[in-house]
Length: 117
Image (cartoon, rainbow, N blue to C red; front, side, top):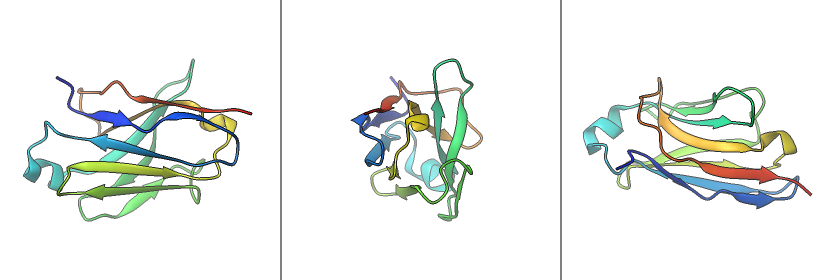
């Protein structure tokens, strides 16, 4: 059983938006609430990279490549993490994953985001 279930990906045109969701259903609520969480992505032929982080105190940080376009948020009651992606670019095409920061070994299947006209 996967620790993280990502959803919300799809095919979108450049300039479009998507909202990704991640359910951390296997995490104990107290563990989730005390964990820093992040969204990672992996493009074909590239290493996985961290693009957005939200701390247990809801402080956020972003990779320079997505700053100003992506917004990470979390919902403690639902043990979920979200990524609002606006002004999408072709270079945002990747499989997106959520995980703790630093990451645990328990990756989900990810959700594919394809930005193309």
